[in-house]
Image 1: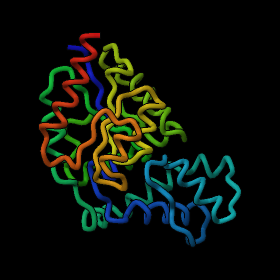
Image 2: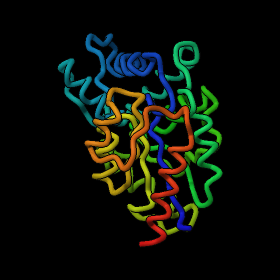
Image 3: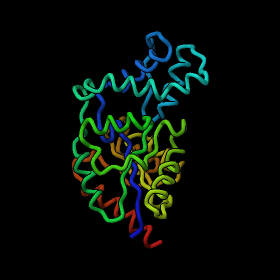
Image 4: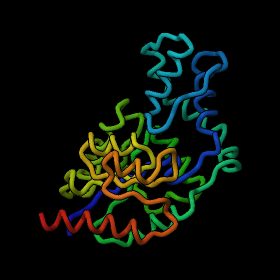
Length: 238
């Protein structure tokens, strides 16, 4: 069977952050500019770079090279200061741990994340709820890699090829996410999409956007394993 790279979205797919993500962006804005944020960040499938540059622009702040250089530092610091708040207000989504474990049992499957979060923040969010086991964070795609989410697919694929020495193609790269932006990122980046309706979009909306399969949640792992195995089998037959 061919190797398969499964890339998980983080927020609203594996975890609920309890509003701490928006607090983190506001905190990063204040660290960056020295003034409190007056507007809430617009998230839902965007990368951290896009979220923060949009937030700066909404406040009338001209984005400079210095801002861009400092963004990873202030984002990491802002979430680190709120990790206990994340633990208190957020939670791992039902079935997320079991889903990762179940896919770890499928031969040839490598799991990581594809997220708009910068890498340190992605790890903190997942590890806070003990969901990092079975995920290889070295081969993921992160909001610190590119402002365009679709471009993160090939970033992750290249990292996985280099680390594992396997031939990964669009047909054997799977992105699992909860928004139509996740589905669009998969299709535009060269991957197969599986939707999970634990975010703002319904099963029907995720399917209509082009998801190969869409699940109401991760509580029952069997449909997810079946969908991934079917994609892997199709690649074998091709």
